[in-house]
Image (cartoon, rainbow, N blue to C red; front, top):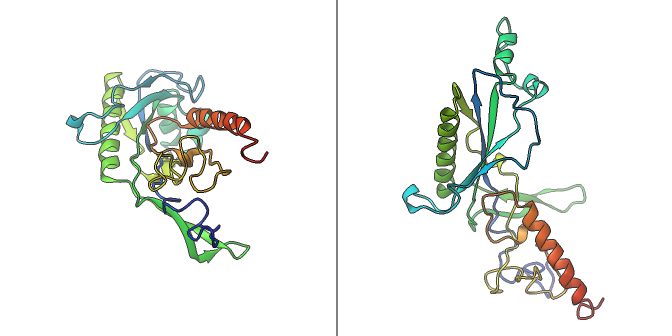
Length: 248
């Protein structure tokens, strides 16, 4: 949008008008189960944990599209717990002692659908230090994402209770948890409804490739890093193979 010119009046690679639109994150939250016994919850790695995909695919009976995963992940360490809010006064030590080494944390991640109303636009009312327009993000959790997320959290409560947790709390649903930024330059075969083709090449500009999470037309319900890396490696190979055509 900042790259508008006589050749590209709506901005570079934006003849479809879709640059910046269909912003996705992930429907994410955490659930924490408290156990009577010690669980050594802070050992191990944060990622690469056991993941349940029983509810990953669409089931019309659940009342929403797509699904989610539930993953066990490393719990809070003593230092992490000490940084969290705890009661002040005579009950302070007892509150921390009741939680340290007794919590199991579940990471919850669901698919966010590509809504055209979720978008990134130029903010002409606020400028950066160079006098250029800032960026404004319009994003809300859709009704589908809310239904999915609430069901995801409810299942996490059930799992932790079934495992023996004496109490369960969750972090609720909030856009701030969905830190995987996706969409805004979606991939597709039709230039009228997408920004880049299946090779990550911009439909409008033959030597422009967009290779990051913005090219994903849907977000899935998992961490996108490996997919983005695979697309980048494939795109790099194609650029090398086509270097003469591209003027390299």
